[in-house]
Length: 112
Length: 118
Image (cartoon, rainbow over all chains, first blue to last red; front, top):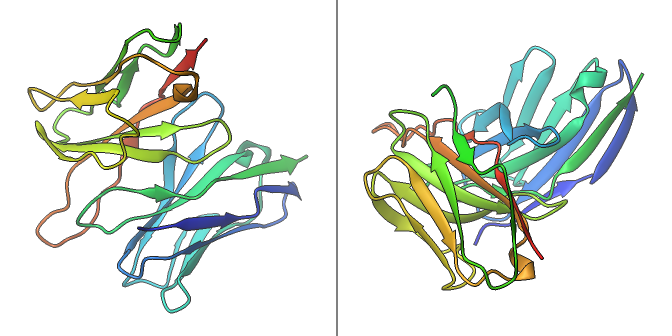
C-alpha cells in the first residue's frame, strides 16, 4: 500500500523567512497530493493541493511542487507570519478511491 | 450546517465500555470518511462510505470497530469493549466523489472527537 514520509518533523523559522516541507510517496499510481494545516484542537484544513498533471501550483504565499519521477512533493511558504504556526500534513491518494494516506506531520513554529 | 459536525467533542470511557461517535457531513456530500489520529501522528484511514454503502473498511483495526451510515447522511462510528490503545482523536471528513472526469475534490474535516480510555 501507499506510504508517505514527511520531513522535517519540526521546523522553526524567523518571521518573514521561508519554510519548506518535503514529502515522498511510494505508490506511483497516486495522483492527488493535498496539504493540510491543523491548529490545536481543530480538524485538518486544506490549504493547497496538486494533481499529477501539474508540476507546480501557487496560491499567494503558498506553493506546492511535484516531481512524479522522483515521487516527491514539497510545500513552500514564503514571508512566514506567526499565524502560520501549526502542524502541516501532506497526503497522497489515488483520486478514484478518495482515501488519503497522510505523512506524520511537521510542527512549524514562526518566531516573531 | 456549514461544515462537518462531530459529537461529542470529548469522550472519556472506562476500559471495556462501548462508545458511539457521531458525524454530520456537509449537506449534499455523498462521500464520508473516518480517520483515527493518534497523538503526534497523521490521521490514519479507517473506513469510507459512498451514500449508505460502506465501500472500504480496510482500515478498521479490529472487529470491535463498526461504522454505519444507514440513510446516507449521518454516520456513527462504534467501538465496543474499548481498550487504552483506542485513545485517539477520531476525525470525520466528507466530500463530493470524483466526477466523470476523475478530478478529486476537497475533503472537509470535522473538529474530531477526542476519545480517552481510562
